[in-house]
Image (cartoon, rainbow, N blue to C red):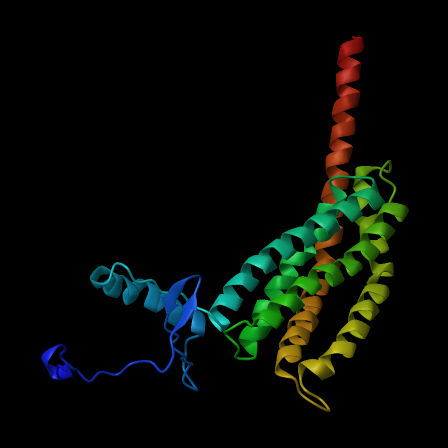
Length: 261
């Protein structure tokens, strides 16, 4: 028999109670959270650690590896999914409008209200003292893209049906203004009824939910701002289109006369 102290040296250390592995690699999980009242998000903390802390540690331990899980990972994946969803939504909206109007340019006239609706969302959150946009606010903004074009369709269809493109160019302004005036009530009522339905949820009347509140806040104020732009911008763009059409027709007439002579 040989005493154990003659064969090994014993050193007291702190060791984990269990060893976990992920993808065949030994893993140590560190939990952390943001301090209440902090002026940064988990994404900001992750970016700071990835650029300012991890490179120094990896230079000393090249075999190591760092990765974020939980909220940071879910948020980054959601951002990529949301970008793809937004692109797909825009393509679907454009495709449907192009088929219905049998035109490749008129859908752009309708969809011009979408960026202004997004501006309305940004202003609304800024006025409410919210500088950080959650995922549900982004979902509400994406839904806004499909709602805000309703008013544009109501306005543009009436303009196409009632304005005579063959009339003298001097009467275009009067025709566009008169037709736009007839759609004022329909556009305003469409917006107000939608906003009235979502505002109670946005401001927590009779109950408050933080996630749904952001979604409804972005939807309601974005729709209000987009509608105001629709009442002015759509008739103006349509009037510019009439002017281009009239000029093209005059140019074609001149070219035919020159060709005949």
